[in-house]
Image 1 (cartoon, helix red, strand yellow):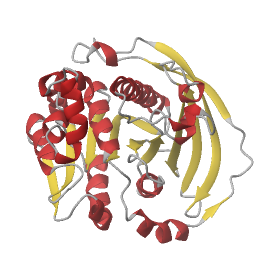
Image 2: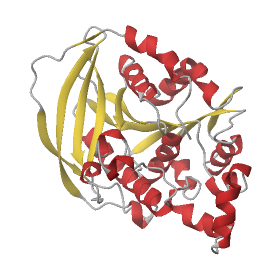
Image 3: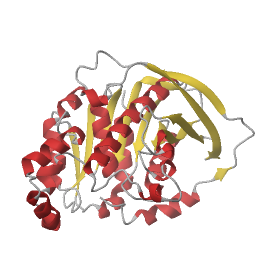
Image 4: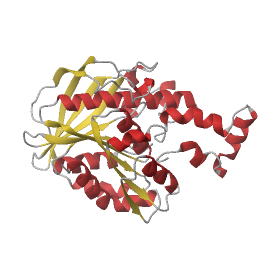
Length: 331
C-alpha cells in the first residue's frame, strides 16, 4: 500500500493554516504508568504488557489558529528493544486544543510511505474541533530509523515476514503505551480515547483497538482484514507465490503465519468498541471485500462507502473528517 497519490491537494490547505513559533516554554519531562485494564485474557500473549513505568519528554513546537491549537513533540521509550536503537524511541506529534478540557483524544496512524501531510491534517482538524490528536510514528517510520547506513532502509512492511510481524507487534505495544500517556494527561478525558489510521495505518489501528480496551472508539479509513485471502492469488504476486510454494509454502501456512497481525483474527474484540469503517467501492489497493470481512466479523457496525478507488479517496477527505469527528466526539 502506497501513499495516497493526491495528497498534494492538501498542501495549499495546510500552508494556509496560520502558525507561529512556540513561546519560551521548556521541555516537559515526566513519568507515567502503563496499567492494563482487566486480566488481558482477550489479548494474545504477544500483545500483552505488564504494569510498568515510563519516562517521557514533551517539547512545544508550534502554536496555530490564533493559539487555538498547539503542537508538541512527544518522545518515550518503546516497551520493545529492537536491534535498531533509533527504533526504540517512540516519536509522536501531539495536537492539543486550547482550554483545560477534558477533551476526547485520538491516536492517528499514517499511510505506508506518505509525506505525512494527511495525518498532520487530521491531527490539526481534530484539535480545532475540540479533539486532541496524537500522531504516532509506527516502527521504522522516518524518525525511528537511522538517517544513513544499512538501517536507513528498514521499513515496517518488508518481504521479510518475521521482520514485518515483529515491527507490527512492536507498534501495537507502543500504541498501548501511548494510550497510557494520554490517559495520564489532566486535559484528556480518559473515558473517551480512540484510534484511527489510513490505509496501512488503518490495519494497525484496528489491531491496536482490538488489543487495547481503553481505546473505546476505532476508525478504519481504507482498511479491513483478511490479508492472505485478499492477496494470495493476486496475479501481481504470481512470481513470489510460485517461489514460496516451491519452498514448501502454501496458502494455509501463509494464513497461519500472518494471523498474529491480521485484524480478522481478533475482530470479535471490536464488538466491544465503537467502530467506524470508511471504505472505497472501487479500491484497487485494499479490495473492498477486506472492509466487508472486518465489518462482518466486528458486529456489522457503521460502514460508509465512497464511490471511488484507493487514491481517489483523497477527494472525499472532507466528508471523511466529518464522519470521524462525529464518531470520536459522540458522547
